[in-house]
Image (cartoon, rainbow, N blue to C red; front, side, top):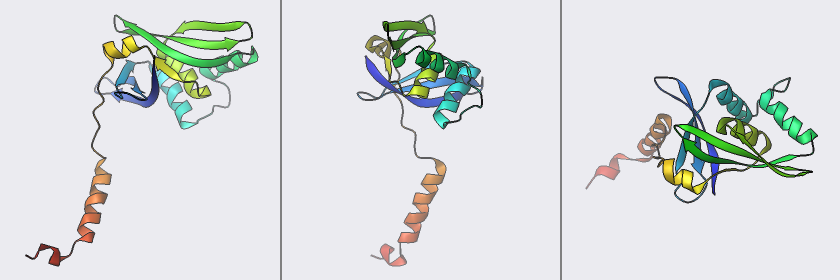
Length: 161
């Protein structure tokens, strides 16, 4: 098993399709992009931003049901990819024992970010479909700020031989 973290939810252009980006916590820091639906993207985004609805949304409701039944989401595991479809499991500790429930990765992550449960992927899955994450250069404003600081720090005498 490989521990993962949520990198974010991005829109793939030009199709405007939401993509859930997970990243390996240690090791090679490979990414796991998963295409998801719009409502699930919103649910994950809301939880990441700490936005709380007046009434429980579907994922909030499921967390409440698990808790009311004396259970706890202990972890989620993204298990496999078949024909461009990813599969995941909810691992729930309950008074009657450990339970594993199959689900979509987007729903699993939406629950995980609400309760702070760790996210894992199988090693086989990461080896099969994990992608190298290319570190993007700093954003344009940061580059301009660094350049301004450099310009402010130099004197004409610095260029004399």
